[in-house]
Structure formats: structure tokens, C-alpha cells
Length: 508
Image (cartoon, rainbow, N blue to C red; front, side):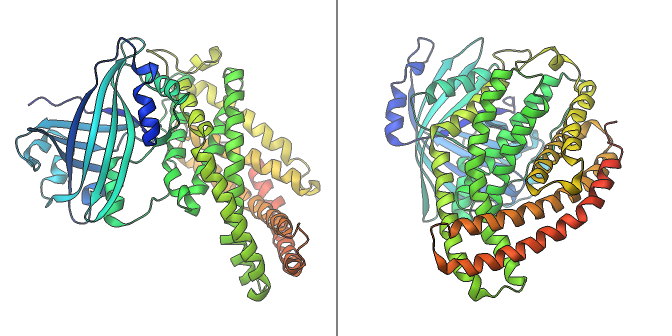
């Protein structure tokens, strides 16, 4: 039996019932090239072991039935993090309601699954409305409006979403269609598949933070391809952490804030080569979102790290407790602001806009910019890294005489150089990169400790800015403790800087 091409590129968008009704009448879906919509009821059973062995391997196996038809599907999440989900997909029509395990031998995962004792673990009931839309060039997108529920035992979750799946052609038109729809319909980008939602219902576990992974780069490919790969991966990493951040997960928010910083770093790294108007627009949007995330992250650090450390640093709990209560209230307010930011059109528009900017309508250079982007990435990398290193050197001069606010600029420049090195590390020997990263991270840790000490004092003072006298003694104690921490870190800084600044860069 011939296999369907094992790839799926799908953008999942979440919206309200009212927005679904508006979507039906949107002009983008009324174009002559759009096929007549087809509506069907689908019941899908997902199969796994009781301990979710397939899910842990990044696999999902399902049997979907509508009417008399049965379709078995195996999906793999090995496509990496991007805005649109990129998954391996294998499908077979079958006769029964349970998987035909023999068919899986045709996939790379057949031997992993053959000996497992599979059973239905959760299911979905969905009313699906499907139509195809022909876009620029030869791109065809299938638009599916899904309303229903996911259920695992007694636990259920409503589904209200639409999916744009690329059936043929380049992904650029898919993102531009999403932007067109987003101009008048409020929605947010969904990052969890129905299978992942079923797994969460079954286990009762909340979403977890995801770290960014290394980006595979070919030094002989054009620099524009490197830009596309890096930004696509970072956008995917940003979105992948949104479910955890929304639940208040400290690491999820941390990863999102880092993701914003890393996206800004890409724009700075390739800044002279990219279209200036485009990069300035995206930089402004990223900075705005970063400020909202940064405020919530600062209060997370204050409440979960600074105050516990201060308690271990011999400040009595009785002094810190009033400060803790006020800080937790400020933290909750900052997290509310963050959730509101996620729900606003700006966040979704920014991500879709950057994703569309990366992708052409057909084959060719994906990112607007100058001729340097056509050069092999290997030849451009040294120039770019030297540019970032010069910024670090500028802020590191006369280190002992630098006030703390100028050291913060050094820390930011050093983070940008570190991120840039991470992006381009695949082009250089790993041991040389690791030596650089070790020196860089030690220096950043000292600068970070000094920065956290200053931040802690500033946030604590803000808590009693309304004239509340009961917090003043605790703020004074915390300020003295923070000053000692800052001074201790700063005392170690010259030696760490000397080692870092005299080391031979791995890209030389």
C-alpha cells in the first residue's frame, strides 16, 4: 500500500464561538477559488500504553471514523519548533476501529511500536467543516473549522478552533492568509494538538516549559536561509512556552522572555543586512512584548529567588513576611498583564507577521535584505560575530570605574554575543565553542547577580512608594543584604572579565 507523503504543515488558531461565525463569512474564504465547504462528524480514538509510551517518544496513533470510513494515522513531532506545526504523518484507510499494527512497519517507528500493548486512552468528538482555498502560485490550504470536545474518562475540554493545513506549495501564502483573517477576526495561535490536550486531561499534568534547541545550519547555504531557520525556531520556542507561562509556571515565563530576547538578537546580529523598515517594526513589537514579560519575570525572581535567599541570608521571616505579601500581589498583577497581552491582537499579529516575512510565495530568498544575505553563511558568520564582540568590548572598557547601570549594558551586549554564538555554533568546532560559552556564562552569572541585587532593591522600594511605613524596615534590611551580594559579585568581575576578554574567539 502506498504511503501518503509523511509530512504535515499545520497552523492551529483558537477562537470564540462568535468569532467562528464571523470566520464563515470572511471575504478571504468567499473567493471563487475556495471549494464548497463539507461538514462531517468525526469520532477519534487515540491509542497508547497506560503509561503513554508513544507520547513520550513524540508519537501519536489514532483511528478516526466518520460514517463508515476509518482512517488510521501515525504522527511524529520530530519536525522541530516552528509557528506552524511540522509533523511526520502517515495515513491508511482501514476496516476496523482499532489500529492495524502491521501497517506501522512501513514507517521509521514500526519496530518501536510492534511490541507495545496499546489501548484507547482518550478520544475526541468533533464537528468539522472543511474547505480548500487556492492561494498565490500553486499553494493550496485546507481550512478546517473544528467544534467539539476532547475527553479522557470523566475529564473533558471544549474545542473551538480552525486549522490551516498546507496541502501543496510554499508556506508563505498560508501565513499571509492567517494575517488576512487576523485583521478582522480575534484569535490566538494554538500550540497544543488535540493529542497533547488529551494527554494533559488523562494525566492531570499542566503544561511544562520547553528549552530552545540547536538550529541545524549549513555553512554553505545562503545567510538568508540561516535567518529563516533561526527565527522560525525561536518563534516556535516562544509559542511552545506560552501554555506553561499562562498557568504561572516560572520557567515557562523565563523561556518566553529569553525567546523574545533571542529574537531581538537575530535582528541585531543580521541588522545591517536586513530590510531596515521591516526589522525596526519587528524590533518595536518584540520590545513591547518583552517589557510586559520582563515585569512579570522580575517579580517571579523577586518572590521565588530573592526573598528565599534573603531568608537564608539571616533576615528574619517576621521582617520579610509583609514584603512577601505585597510582592506576591504585585506578581499576580504582572501575570494578569501578561495574560492580557497574550490575548490582544498585537502578540498574534507580531508572530504571524514575522513568520510571513520569512517565507516566500515560491522558491527563492525568503528574507528581504541586501546582497550579503546571498553569501554562504560560513563566510558571513565571522563578520557578524566580530560586530557583536566589539559591542561587548566597548562596554567592558574601564570595567572597575563603570557604574552599575553601565554594567547592565555590558550584560545585555554579552547576552547578545552569547545568543549569536549559540545560533552559529554549528559552523565551528564544538570544543572551541564550549570554552567560549564557559567563560561567557561565568561572566554573565556575575553580572546577573549584581543586576538582580539592584533589581531587588528597586522593586522593594516600589512596594512602599505609596508611603506605607510598615514595609520600610524590611526594605532597608533587604537593601543592605542586596548591596553585600552586589559588591561580592562585582569584586569577582575584573578577574572574570580578564579571562574572557583575553581568550581567543572561536570564530577567529
